[in-house]
Length: 65
Image 1 (cartoon, rainbow, N blue to C red):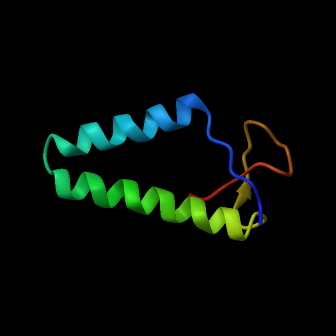
Image 2 (cartoon, helix red, strand yellow):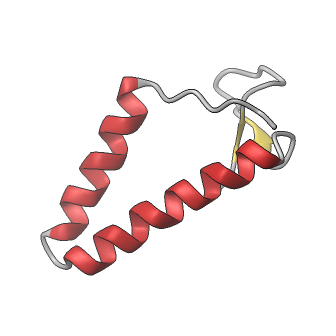
């Protein structure tokens, strides 16, 4: 299993997403954050799934779209 490391910016972005959505619906904001963290769990269990992040082009950094 891979180790997931969050940058301060990544956590801040997730918080900003939740805050933005919560202006319309707290329920959907919570669902979206749950969805993000479930995708992260998939990457943790299957680290080679997804594509290599093109901005970094490092084989150990993947993303799910």
